[in-house]
Amino acid sequence: GDNGGVVGWTLKPSEKALVSMIEGSRKENSSGGVNLKVFETVEELMGKLSEEELKLELTRLGMKCGGKLLDRAKRLWCARDTPLDKLPAKLFKGKGKMLGNNGSRGAGEGASQQTDRNNNKGETVVYQ
Image (tube, rainbow, N blue to C red; front, side, top):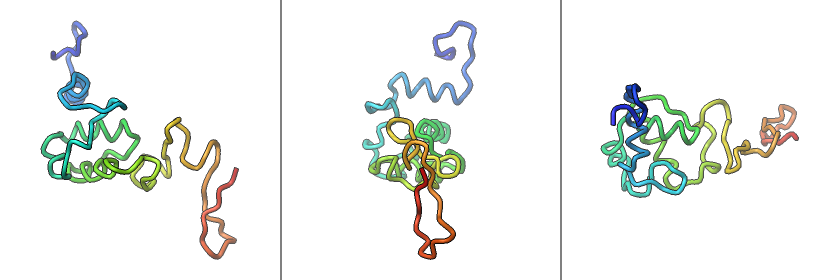
């Protein structure tokens, strides 16, 4: 309903979208999010999910969630067939913040990646 199961509570539009997703109005996968495999194209994804629903799913995945409907749909589409840890860091919130399956950063626990300025080859070096 309009109260999300809490007496006296009025849902905001973003909360309504989240409740509709949770209540199973969309086919869900094992991780509890939108099953992107049911969509054949970015356009179909845009037609089935609102801007707010795209934002909620991008947020759940730790991805950037700004921009227009097309921007959000394209960003989410990247996660359809590619594991999150294989996606470019620029798709995620913050500089290089990418969470692995265990919630750790992609470079390894406590490790940081940066380009060594003394390395003329421009290779990325991981410092522990």
